[in-house]
Image 1 (tube, rainbow, N blue to C red):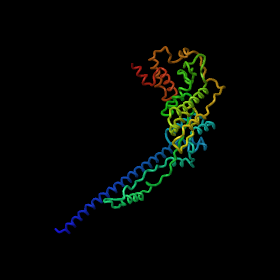
Image 2 (cartoon, rainbow, N blue to C red):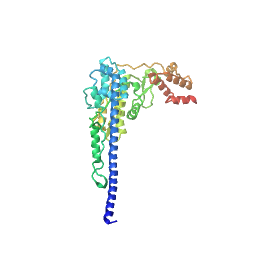
Image 3 (tube, rainbow, N blue to C red):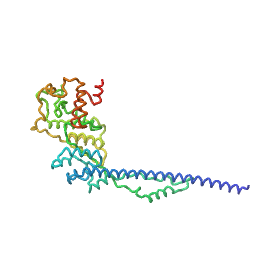
Length: 397
């Protein structure tokens, strides 16, 4: 075999091998961009479906609350409506709020409108449908990218760019630039009730409410809901005879508001390090302020943090509700503690297990989460049990 034949054979073999390597590399390039395109398609379609469901849910909640919205009139903005119907939780909070005021009175309606508060600089909408659409826009999904413009042996290749271009032409809706989504920030402030000032909650509000309880200087009688006594700061006690120490409801409100201002200030200065706080912390603080009827700290939704000094200044300038001296005590306190216990269904003469058994029966029979059940649970805690389970364990001993 001559040299020419051998060289031809070598070149033919090399060409076949080179072609195979190029084809392999080209397939890798195609598979890589195709995976990206498919993943992008799935993410966009999932986001579109999620937003469709959000809009559907918001419209359904609106259908449930449309009558109340109509009653509140034009002063209740489209933004407030959109905030209320943005979740089941907020819709439920709003329903409860409307039960606390008279919808048939101008003052009652205004109270409800004022208590659905949006963040500072919240946008205005042309209609409720406009608000729903703009608050549920599809988020931008990262597009596929060309990761290589060369194939085997460093040869130039436009395989990925061509396939990406073809995908965009075939399904342009998957690559459209989405509109800017509007995020509504706000709060629904419940009507203040001294009985709910001890609401157990999580995170920031729980922290502040726990501080408030220590700062009020008030003790609520377990045998009488709504009756508070001023606690002596030295002895920790107060006389209950002839109504001494019993405070009126306006005094209770004022004391809780003052204690909340003090507790928030302490929380910011001692409980939070650094010079800034996040909006999430401010929302937690505002939730605690709402419990006692204090105005919230204004929030700028365009930023995610706030100077701690600014928050402290806002708290210090918050006005409290002054006590009206003409209002009498919420309830006269007559008779001694012993006399009152004799009239109670759970008097001290009964064995403790009998008391616990009777209480558990009454708790089970009371409507769930009702005021009656709440009072009975307070009595159970007064006997030293934090839950029904603890009481049952005690009876099983």
